[in-house]
Length: 277
Image 1 (cartoon, rainbow, N blue to C red):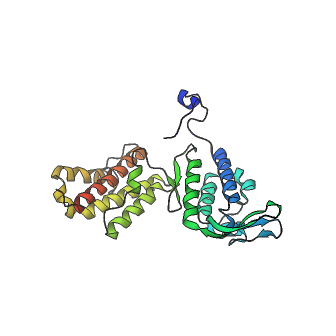
Image 2: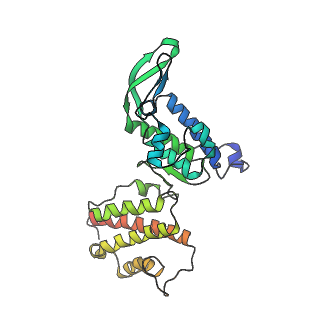
Image 3: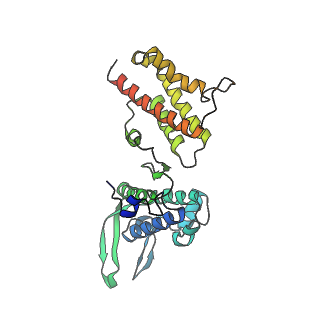
């Protein structure tokens, strides 16, 4: 459990709601500097040697690589451009570096003038795991709820109490189910998702329930089944006509529906998997 300090407990801390973007970027740059010093970006970006000067990594020109992959100029170097980042820029760089981090495993120590380790063997998966942990520690201080997911994308954090549902395995081998659930979750959680994106994500989950309907009829009462589809059919999700109920807070309502449908799908699939009635 994270320790809270006196001013946080008293409610007098000026940053109770989180830090501004500029402060979070500054924290991130410091974390990046530590990881680079520890060799986590030597394979990708190279390093300095007191004898040989700069030793190239796999990526010889970081700014060029960013332009080719992100299609943006002016993101590198971090210390110069970081203070000018918009939120989109920051998250682009976080995701870019996730693709290029690797944990140093083995190498040789160059003791002349305390040059340091020259790493030769790296592990990408382990490096990404360490990087993700450190980045999420930084993002936890941001005033907005984001996290770096294992797929290397910055996503909206799950609402409190629903964290485990995104980590749980989907109990189905049917790609029409698992693939569409994954796509709906990504559509909902992606940075910059709009109300229309979230409505589509809820619609996709409702379509999955429709796909499951013939198999799960025995698991639901007639009334429960009717209520389940009434939500999507009569509240401006799946149909568009003058009979739809639309006078509600879309942001709150769609959030509730998304988690409700996602949890329901998981429950129904698990009951079906175990042959429960």
